[in-house]
Every structure is written in C-alpha cells, then in structure tokens.
Image 1 (spheres, rainbow, N blue to C red):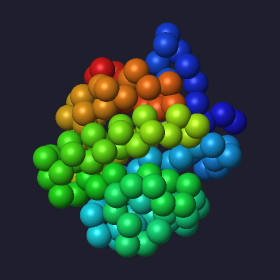
Image 2: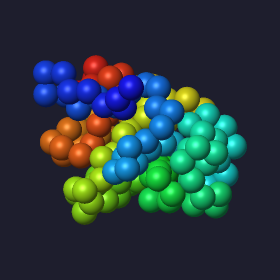
Image 3: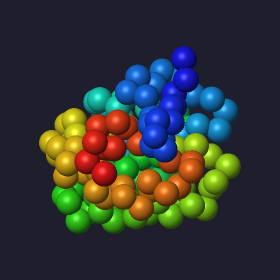
Image 4: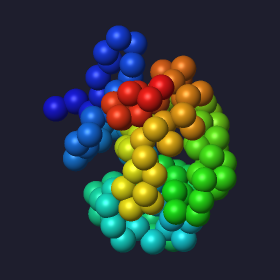
Amino acid sequence: MSNTSIIDGRRIASDRISNLEDNEIFVFGSNIQGAHGGGAAWFAHKQFGAEWGVGEGLTGRTYALPTMEGEASLKRAVKNFIACAKEHPELTFLVTAVGCGIAGYTPNEVAPLFKEATSLENVFLPQVFWDFL
C-alpha cells in the first residue's frame, strides 16, 4: 500500500505508515530531548531508526520535530524542517499530524505552520492538515 496520494493537487501522507520506500522520510513529533517514549516518536524510534537523544532534524529514516516546548519553538522547528525539505529534493517527507497527539495541539493550530510546505513537491501532509490549509 502506498504511503502517499495526490488528490486535487494535494500531496497527502497516509495516516497509516508502517514501512518506507527508499527515499521516504517519516516526519514525527518529538521533544527536544529526543526521548521517543510514546506515540509516533516511539514508532519512529522502533521502526525507522530515529535516534534516542535527537529531538530535531534528520535521524535514521526520520525527521524529528520538537512539539512539546511551546508554540514559538514549534514554529521555528517547522521553518527548519521546510528548509531541510528544500535542501533535499531527492527525499520525500511524509508528515504525520505532528503536535496533535501528546503535545495537545489541534490540527487547525498546527496546519498553518506548514503553509509554505504546500508548494514543495517532496512534502506530503496529512489530510487533517490539508483540511485547514
């Protein structure tokens, strides 16, 4: 089963990602300490090689976005992520609903942070984010 779909120009990441193609990167919410103890962070650590202790950036076949340190920190981290996606057009970034689990944000709070990513062909966002973009 594919991890991506394109519908009406929207690049949509699957809600259920259990494996990755060679060029795919699992983008998940973490904490700045990189203690991947629950939710998508735990899955990223166990399944895709997210390194314990790395709370932001590329690690294994993942990209960690710190979501637990407040809104200003999350905004900065998303800007860093978008810069990374621009620098790595050879990779396909599959963004999960970062911040919308343990961190406690709602999709309408987080989705606008990814507005610039909607123009990047190598970034796929969850449908729940597209609903607010």
